[in-house]
Image (tube, rainbow, N blue to C red):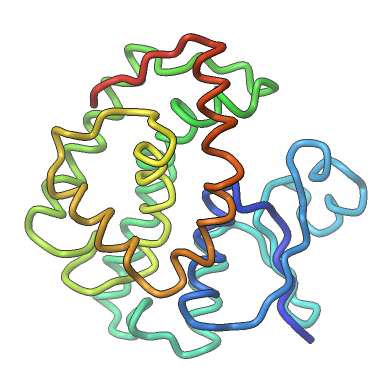
Length: 225
């Protein structure tokens, strides 16, 4: 039975899972699930009572939360290059993944979400929020000035998750990242990986023009972080 992935590539956490699957050439079927309309149905809430995407169904084993899914898939398929077996190396990856939710993820909540999810009722780039985003980016800039990837000099699932949040600032013109040269080099480095085009290009082709129109309509001014 092929792996089922519930979600849409517009979602950054979904995209991270698809990036991993394409990178490792693992067959899957994407079950289009658009929030909020598709994630509030009784059928979907049976899969994930939290009503969030992504969700996977692996031969009857249902799992939600992108970081749990990334770790599970790596552990099941022996992808130790992306999720190390060594306890301390894995702990460093996990450390970033836990930190991500309250930090890097804010890029979407503050810059991307307000444009595409009016139901969230969140203002675009509030000054206090932009200040917090700058702090997050400064932290990552320091890490990436010392190493090629988020956790050391090897690609891990931490990069897949972080990249979906950060690179969209360039893809959709959401923020000026020119203060962070190490991050910009890392974005380019990850874009060249196998599986990137397959997991991103169609979504970008469909969405860039739409986001530009929304930005123009709302008269948003992308902040410099």
